[in-house]
Length: 166
Image (cartoon, rainbow, N blue to C red; front, side):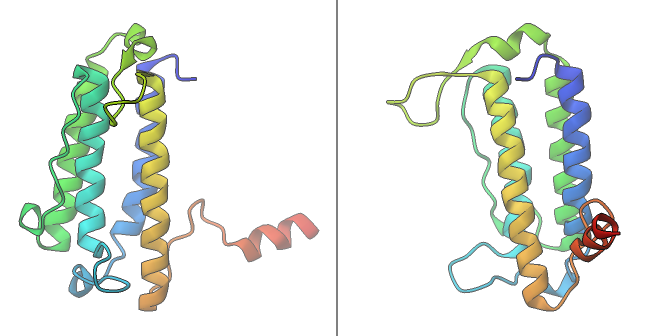
């Protein structure tokens, strides 16, 4: 359970830094690439992460669900996508840091109208899980494109195995 807004925002900064490492290695000319037709493009994922961060934080702050979308016009290039992701992140963190810790224990509406409310801290954890899901999606996209995805903690599985087996 999350007990402290400042501790959470500090934690989420590290989550976003790792995600940004993946975003920054997307080849600029592949921003509109998708695994197959109808799937998110790389740019869609970047814009979606930006918009959903505002959405999750918005429900925690105001109890209102609002998704700004991930339309290409929001940030058509990789450079604009990175800037948009950073702007939305700064805004979300500013909003969160303006809250008192007690808000974390307040109920917020579920997205589905017929579902029971959920504690605010759980929505923030859902935001982390959502970000991790799409970071993994980017890692898959990069691999399929032939781009080596960054190592999440600076080591590959081979390094971990070598260290663990002596």
